[in-house]
Length: 265
Image 1: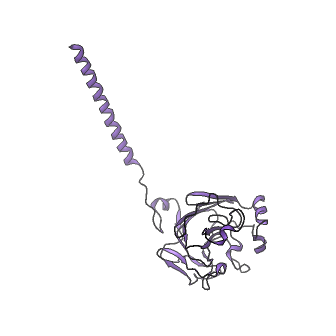
Image 2: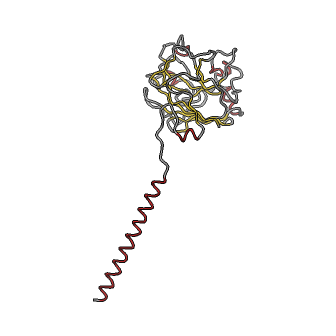
Image 3: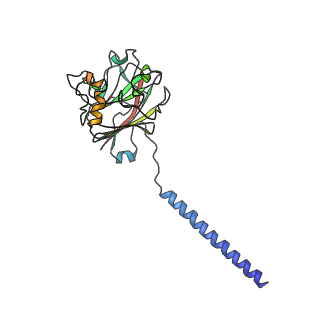
């Protein structure tokens, strides 16, 4: 009988000890949970507190063209519109010539080393582009004669199968380096893209994946540019500036841009 009582007491002791440890673990877990950082929801055409603290700035507030103007102009051409929190260019059907009262637009500040984020979408079969490190001179009538371009393109546009090895597809460095993997979303859906420039290293990201990486001013860069169409447009195209304008292209098709933000590095 004494042996049974001793066994019972021992089992009861173990049970209570385990219960105590379990309670302590739960309490510790609760404490850890409360100490975890609260993840902020993204802000449409705005910045979270964490982004503000990290040095990001908005280039578009969703309500005005403040800070923007046309290439070679003092103001934004009238065919560029504000549409439901987006910068919008309506299709003109004029292709690269752009709208009669359109043309490429730029943000009126030069950037050197930076991390740029924005979203874009196209209507079916559309074409546009995102320029960076661009220059503005009286001798050159278009920003793309000096600026690398991250391609904005629908798979249904004729350019999708032109160029070489897919180097005109969405996310590519236009006509030079193809985006790989190719992960553009269907026409009419928003694509989230990023461009990072740091001391000549350039990275394109599209929908969360790195799709292009290259290096300005290197022998390989000069060789690749020399074999492209760009020297015919500007003999000095390979000499991309260390800082320049960020621009959006009017290519004659419906295109929308929003959530445009940048962090200088």
